[in-house]
Structures are given as C-alpha cells and as structure tokens.
Image (cartoon, rainbow, N blue to C red; front, side, top):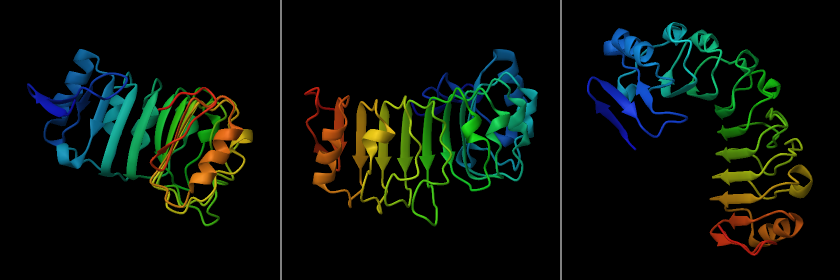
Length: 241
C-alpha cells in the first residue's frame, strides 16, 4: 500500500511489522500524541512527506515504538533512537551520525547504509535480516562489513566489491540477494560461507558470467531457487524461482 493520508495523519500500510504513522514537522506534537494514544509501534519520516527535523529526540517520548524508517533525511543527532529499548526494525539513511548498534540489542531486521564509524553490529545476537546498501571499501572486499552469524537473510545492493571475500561464515543463512554490484565478478567459496543457502538472486551484476552461476549451483546442495543475471538456473531440488 502507498503512503496515504487517513484523517489528519499519514499512514503507510506496508510498513512492517505493522502499519506506520508518518512524522510531520508541521504537526509534530499531534503526531506524538496520536502515537502514544493509539500505541502505534511503527513510525517513518521523509522530507517529501513533511519531516524536516535534524534530530530524533522526539523518539524519547514514544519509547514503546519497535520500528523506524527514515530516508532522505539530514540528521545531526540520532540519540533519540537509543530510547527505543524494544526496537526490532531499523532503517535510517543516508545522512546521519555514526550509530552504535550495541545500544539496540533487540534488533531483528536492519536496512543499513554502511558508515565506517558505525559500531556494534556483530553484537546483535537476535539479528535475522540484514540489507546492506552502498557498502564501499578500498579493498573492494567485505572485510570491514560486520555481519552477525545469526542472520537468515542477507541482501546487498550497490556495493563496490569484486568478490564475496571478507564475509564471515553464516551457518544459518537461507537467502542471499546481490543487486547492482557492477564490479562483482566472483562469488568465491560460497558453499563454505553459506552451507544452508536455499535461495540465491544475483541481479544487475553484469560481470558475473553464466558459468559462475552454474559453478555455484553445483556447489550448493540445499539450493532450491537460483536466479543469476536474467537466467533461472536448475537446482538440485529441480525447482525454480
């Protein structure tokens, strides 16, 4: 569902884990009161939808919130996030100070626009889903991307890497998606990194050749679905995406 106005407030029905309410600078007090009164647990903000704050201090007034999504914002202070002790869904990008994820230990799902100064990602013992956006590193590997071993789903988009080297072994990973990584050439020892992988999507990564896709499918015995650059590949299970 698109973001729509319902009565006085903006609502986003597709925001998870529950429908979200849009924070608007022009009626910020009213938004806070509605979130508190109705016990709304998901909130979002974007300049195109009226959010023009430079900090997230307002979140300290709604500590029951469990999901936040702020995009195209220019934040100078994010300390209000640390008031959300039950936060499970996180997405804040792109202009923000560094974040210490260890102060948000209940996170389960994170959309992360990587900053080298960010800390604490590996401490998230309950993290299940990580979407990494615009990771950049001089080594062109994932050696500096902290990924907890608990994740089940990993999605990577717009990274500058040439290989998956540097990612740790992820024994629980079931789904891997890599999108628009134009330098990516090789998926390396993917069978050793993700022994339980079932779903693989490689899209708009033009340097990954067809034979590379065939090679990795042969190595992944549990793979059920494989899609590599417009090619649906047969898997051991005989199923396709």
